[in-house]
Image 1 (cartoon, rainbow, N blue to C red):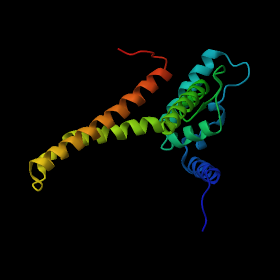
Image 2: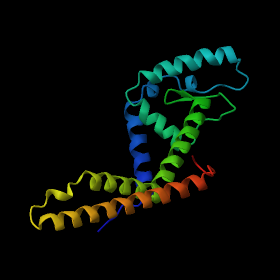
Image 3: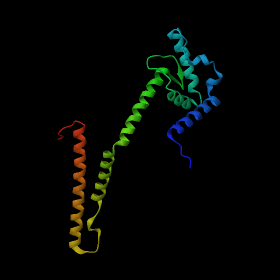
Image 4: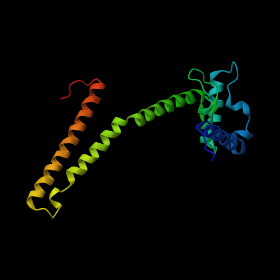
Length: 180
């Protein structure tokens, strides 16, 4: 059985994006010099050409694919405004790459937060236990109902204590110290 690795998936995705761009991009029929600033070109001239290039890109049906490929290729420089790709200037591409990297880091950190998921699960279980009616069982009489309530109360107290312990530890690690 063939399994696709992440490297193969990235490579395959890149080829798909490039094929779409080659087949349908509006820039394929335009002057290629429109998207790149020439050496020594005055800023005012480049700004006018850049605006025209962005206008062409914004009307392109595969602009998003072009932008994704530009980000994959690490196009753009935060200090030099010398190109347009996917409807973004080089500085905008660099900023988008940074934003995506930060967002991805936050998502990966959240996925690794097993303690946070445990806290969520315990909170759900606590709400579920709190909503149960221990007297709902008809057999066993009053003695059994009292035992059911006692068991439920013990479970609720244990869940609440676990939640409290996790929250205190998380707050301490975050530097909150003693919380009122």
